[in-house]
Length: 525
Picture 1 (cartoon, one colour):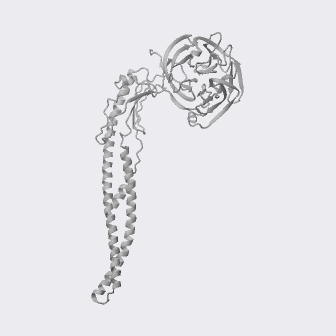
Picture 2 (cartoon, one colour):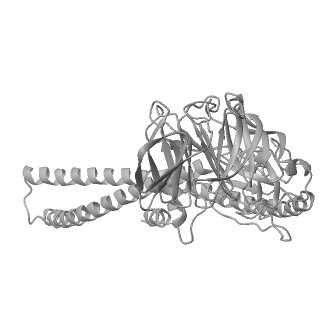
């Protein structure tokens, strides 16, 4: 009975019922000017995050290199001992990211088997099996108790009969001896079952001993890693302070909606949001987030797919949030009266702007009233004349930025070079135009940021390059070399959004987006 009570106690122990999922320790440091970085600890999966300088999610980390913590090497801080669990391995290589607000993060990831998840799972399985075994033993004990009471009565009856035989008051018969032998045989069989059950209890005791050893090992493992983690976080804080002192760009990204910077510094690696809802056959289209939101209006995301011919635009799909877009829920489809053409539309201030079908006209669809206005862009080439390379029917390319709405196009007079036109507030009329020297069919796409047009070209099947810029504020042109990774060959559209500093790309049916990082004022190139 003592063995069974001990088994029940351990089987009910909360430690044995603990389900081990992933355990993570993340340290994030907020690197803003004049503030000491803080550390925040969260859970899942064993991750130590360090703050330094680098690009959003994927770019190398110059700051970490300066701190003698280069990409691909483990941090110099002590690594937890593997004495308790020989399977533990050193930390994985360091990577780094920077978000749109200029917060930089370097990440070190422990291998999956560093934490003894397998041992905890085995421990939980053993506890479950032990609970079942104890339940079976208890059921047997109840059965044995009933049978013992019955055999006790039989033994007392047999004892009385033997006493009568001894004193001669009862004459024995062959039937009496047969009945006595049967009763003794039944009791011998019962004793055998009881002995077998007790032998099984020895196995239960052995399982309990093994589980106790495992629990002790897990406790010592956890204590040693907590100490090592605290030591690592102390080192991390010091590195973050050094990083903030040595890197002037950290924490100095301009506020949303302002142009207090010296142009694009770099772009993050792409985030592949999803394949468009119609499938891979629909390769041409555009997508983005609504720009210039009216007061009180919630954000909206839009996706505009062209037909299989890569030309005609029938409708635009609207989502109330980024989460809805990811989950393909809560959307509305707005039909486009008279159709549009090309992958250059934009959603701006409650209206959807696009190139009217088979014309050099701009169309504006009011999403609330459904009314459509249109106006011709003077001398603009259209119907696939001077479209971007690899993208047909994009004669008029709409672009929104911090200063308003723009249209990029070419004319016969400009000999195919890009003309930048700025639309008047709430109007389809061109307020002013700028002539550039960049030949439009030599570019893959273009977009506007703070009055500056940035133009891209293909470098390889998986990389674009921002190679040309025209500043409408100064009239100056410049040559750049900013890499822009992609997942497919052809870029169908690019749309910058000033409300989140992100660049939205439609690439052969896939929706991608990038974080745009700017060079602060006073920082040389």
